Amino acid sequence: MIARGIEKIIEFLFPPACPVCGAPVSLHGELCADCFGCFEWIDSPKCSRCGYPMVFAPNGAAVCPACARDEFGLEWLRSACRYDEMSRSVMLSFKHGGRIKYARFMARAMIWALRDVPADCDIVMPVPLARPRLIHRTYNQATLLARPIAHAMNVPLDVDSVRRRHRPDMGHMTPRQRKENIRGVFTVARPDRVRGRKILLVDDVYTSGATLSELRRVLLRAGAKSVCGVTFCRVVRTV
Image 1 (cartoon, rainbow, N blue to C red):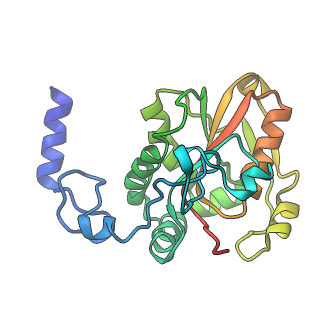
Image 2: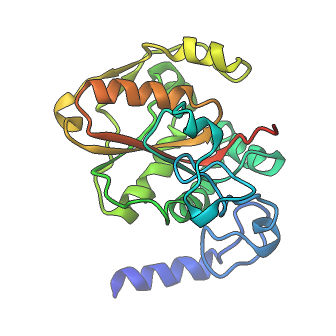
């Protein structure tokens, strides 16, 4: 009762507003209808393994060409929306511009994206940042997204079992350069925490898959049972 009373006072002093445009909404962290409609949310049909948007998926169980060739690096992946002008603007403002208020609606969208996959992970793990980058940015955007996801799934959040060495930013690299750059960057500092566990990795964007694939490789080598992933947005290439 006390907590609800405090919540009502906060809502009176700070009425819920769309985190993107500031329009009135019914709940804190909720997008207004106009902003919601600006995102290209990923829904069915999609690849049953990596979640890649598809034109047609018979019986809802089709796989994309990459997964059919077994080229995908995780057990499965889900992403809330496509990487486009709108999601890019929001993500970069959240990641580099200190707009941490975006974390609530981004995480809610990611939880929605997980609706059709097994909810049986043991650990939710944000992709770690290298220490110099964390000091410069002051926060890990993946951790801000992972915390409400772990809470919704009622599983532990693990932020320190894996460490990351500093490497050059991969923003303008080719897929092959990304793969080479990320190789050997992660170290499992607490293998006892990941051994035998099903792990859900959390990141803001899926581009080439190099980061999540490398993290999966070291986690499996440390004894993890399985490694899946969820991101807010993903690059969807026109073929």
